[in-house]
Image (cartoon, rainbow, N blue to C red; front, top):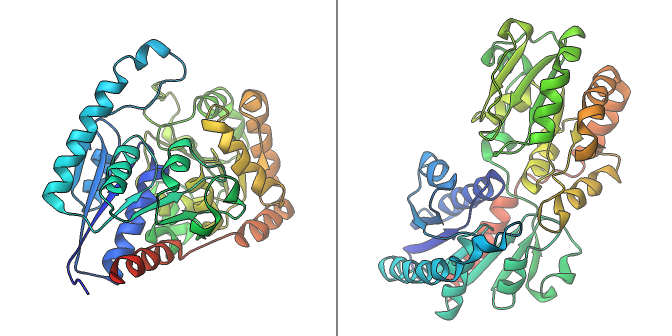
Length: 365
């Protein structure tokens, strides 16, 4: 049995890929402290900032994904792909990994494909209820495919699937923060109804524009707002902080934000939903309609059909989102129902399940 292990974790692009990857890395270190973990991401993407903040080293690849909206922008893609494989070869030579974990994102494909060529065990985590194209291709030679939900046999080899749920950050799964403490952190009043509005780590135009247009209706009803706009929304903040609005491009302390909130407005990326289930919050979901294979709508409908969330379509957000917020904030019985049903879907130990399965495969060699 080998004592010192070397593991590469590949992927990123959004918080939905990065944060579960960090959760898995933390669980691996906890179960097997003698594990060297290196992240591989895409240069210029948010993993290059967030992973070092979590205490892990990362190397960036010169790579980009296929551009669906402008075919001419894909001209340089083959060159970038070849360059990325050469970079990956150098990374593997220096680190000699015992296993490679892919969580999705541009950098995931060349790293896992190279590992498979070398006969190194590869593990895939598919966070969504719809298999991504790269993960489907990679799954044929993968050791294990971890999925968030059941019914994924239509995308991946059935004998390789292990249903684990989505790894959620430990500071969220184990949060004991009170609403009072959380509201004070954001400079808000703990006795007022508070809405948390997040559009994912990159922001959500439809949510942001609806809030910008109609936020005064919330203020008039004495409702507070914690609003993560994302970097893509550059509208000036014209709202006086004394009105009960906390606005930021990115909220690092999401455990505080969830604890402060009575109601959450969110996109329906897989990780956002996993966190909402764990924190048991009544939620209004606005799926991003242009996500690959419209997987965010599929994710949202999985909750809506279980009476665990409310859905507002992206195209209807401008006119329907704020009225939906007002209705839910004022309907305590609906909140209680949503809270009860979403709690049934929570998985708090997915990171440990994934880490144990990976270690079992590596250490049996």
